[in-house]
Length: 318
Ligand code: GYE
Image (cartoon, rainbow, N blue to C red):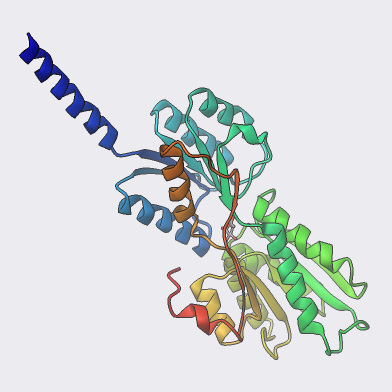
């Protein structure tokens, strides 16, 4: 009898340690694959998961909120351990996040923000997009100092915005506008959503070049749109960057854009850090150990110009 009991408890101890060692499953609902930045974010998430033996399920939302909602629902029914998602837009997530909460699955929001009640998710990791917008304007303030635009002449600006209602778009627009408003000679001629893609960036820029004779500054809210804008500007016979006809401000800081900062084609790139996978891993570890986590987690970011770009290009992985 005692022997049997011992065997049974040894077996159940082994089973529970096996259960404890069972790999975590994380369901990741990604926005899509619109940009180089997005590709980097996805590959970092994969690398981090692989390093730690996490089973990572990825669903590509293909730029549609309804696809992301479907993916989150399917992760809930699969009973994954954690749900991570990068929301295409800020609004409209209440119902599905309530469902995840009722199923007791922690949700970590990544990169862009959601506007709903924060009790519906466990933590958010991403960028301070408004500060990124301010940084772009601060750089422009400095750059214009001592030039003909300083105080007097009008600076004609166009803005290529990202996806409509995405927090990256909203924040960068707001931060830049906040500072632009304080300069009576900065005139924002136009701004349109160009969806964070090269094709749209080119299309909107072509339209602006036909519509406005004098464009002094282009603020392009990601590198991919910037590449499209460069093509359109060159096709119109103009130059960009250091000493060029049009000053080019970009966001993201992907390797291919930083190469263009180095060669002077892009004046400045406001970094947006896509390495959130590393931060999320930390959060998952803490939650697993029953430790508290911060609700809001900002990633670190810098501003790159020709002066400091070499310091980062060497070991840039994305
Ligand atoms: O800037 C852009 C992308 O949400 C921060 O989305 C992200 C933005 C990034 O596709 O390139």
